[in-house]
Length: 325
Image 1 (cartoon, rainbow, N blue to C red):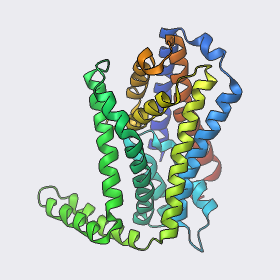
Image 2 (image 1 turned 180 degrees about the vertical axis):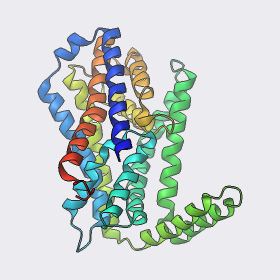
Image 3 (image 1 turned 120 degrees about the vertical axis):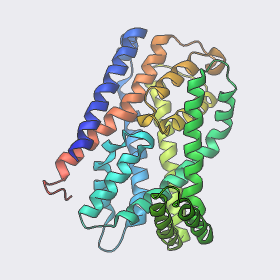
């Protein structure tokens, strides 16, 4: 646990250094100083709400007579700081480990619930982002490495959505398990994945249509709140771009956040965001480097800094030395 906390602090310091450098290079301090604190606070509230909506959908799948939603939500939010990892996989693993250590839910059951919600959210991202993604690949203004980062993120979203949701049909889940079992002859860890997908298919088979519909709605709400938070970052920085441009850019950045080589897409998100917002053909208005940097810095503070700090505070306040909530 100490290792995860230390890693979160190191990444927070790296983010602070990155954003300070961006503000210095673009002379964005005045733009940041004139930003609207109320709108900044509202954007922060929306982003935290998006996290809570996701956690609620996850907790709903784990709820039982002996395990209430409140307890699961508390534990889930306390582990959000570990999301500063590629594909945000650290938070999923930590939540599952803490639930198992507390004797509340098995590791496999917790991971299965996470996979269901992630799969639904990834499917929505995939549908929303498809057109924006392919349009961005044709943009000659983007460097090759940025296109590669987007392609890797898009591939992660597409593959994860398929792997997490295709087992809703039990026979398909068993076929995926069989595929991993045959691949284990060449790479032994695939055998564990085969066993897991057999369990995961059984977990999905036990879900009612009502609960699956509720989780789908919550996953959509989470993505919508995340977009609204992104939109209010512009308003907070006294900057406005057309709604279709905001939707396109948000879709691209959400994909980049899932890039498997960078924690939360740090560097790629900022670079692509700056490039797109610098294009008048994209924004329909000419934005100064300082205004663009202010939007990016506010967005990073809202998506990275505030949730991580609040999660660390929640962890320190609600977990005992034995690690039980």
